[in-house]
Length: 461
Ligand code: UD1
Ligand code: CA
Image (cartoon, rainbow, N blue to C red; front, side, top):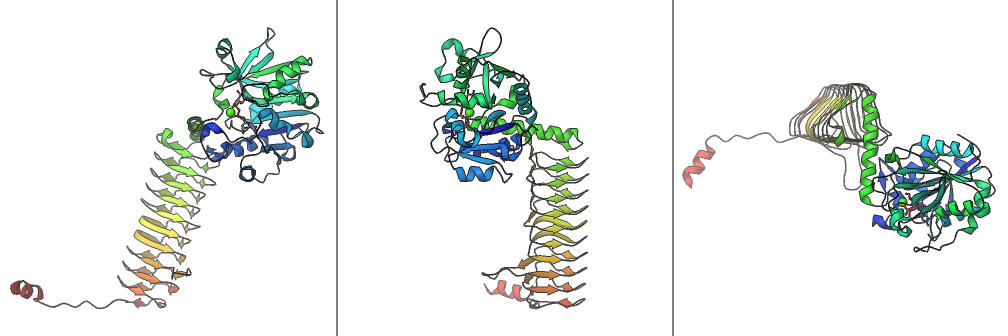
């Protein structure tokens, strides 16, 4: 990280080609917004107080998405082009000497090492500026890099303004620049909106600096994949796929088995231990950590959750903001949410929902239950169909069940209510009052049997 570089991230545009009411840089790929990625990348090359994000469309949301890392903002109220965007920061930036790096905010795959390389290349040269170029099979839409005989950049010609011959050039401007800051500000005012789009093009700085006697050098990157810009939702999906491939590849190299990796979605922020198996179509998102020897079943979604070692999530489960301790099991078709916690070897089976509920060590809720705002001790069995009635239409109430209790099938526990250690609840009970330790509670009417009644009825009709 250098202290003599200021970084400007261009993020004020609407992104007309996205056909969206949302600013382009707020769209998401690889588990984060485009502006979020750009800021994270910039933070690897400069301290936050030297990073400036140009905001315009939905400025508030873009500022929020940029995070509270301490980066600063430049307001571009009218979007008159990439050159105009940087010029809006003249007051805040012109006093900073050294280097001025400028990053397009719609190119989230670029690696921090590549940006560091760009800055180093400029720092080590006497050139007026350096820009990243690459070669694309289909350069349509990008600015073309026109080189002189010495290999320096002579001009960037935007696709719209390019001649037939220029359009055949497959070397493109990736949208990442590093200038000598003093030179940049000395000449930036010379950018004119003299193009079909009537915009102030940042790329005009190439010819402007050239005229003033300063050369612009290319920093050629052979791997074009990391330089894909996003202008449409088709490109958004393509970039997202590349992010996903990167993440699953890294995880596999670190010892995670991923079956059918092309179907799996894992955010870069997720941590997974060795020998864990991820089945097809799983989605693992946000601040999730998963231990060793776990299994995440097919089509399950795990977000912002902590799983210790040996945890098994069977297929089609949804685990959100919850915790499962060593050896716990959930699913298939389980739903855990809002800080639920399954302690060691606890079991949550099919069609069981836990909300803000702690299920103690070795306790089981195997089938068809709703347990909300509940605390359940260790070694307790929750029978099929048990429901905690935690909501009275106005407020939520807690249910507390002790250790080694047995809740018979189809019981209804009307909260607030407590069931003591070792207590039994008869199947089909409605429990409205506390059940003491080791007691049996029956909350249902007795069965009545009328011998011969059915036969008599048949004979009458
Ligand atoms: C730009 C380059 C083009 C390059 C391409 C690489 C110019 C004139 N052209 O074209 O040479 O090949 O990127 O992806 O720079 N923005 C603002 N304010 C504005 C306009 C844009 O902040 O007034 C921001 C956008 O939010 C976006 C970035 O600048 O993040 C690039 O803008 P965009 O319109 O996508 O430029 P391209 O046409 O792709
Ligand atoms: Ca673009």
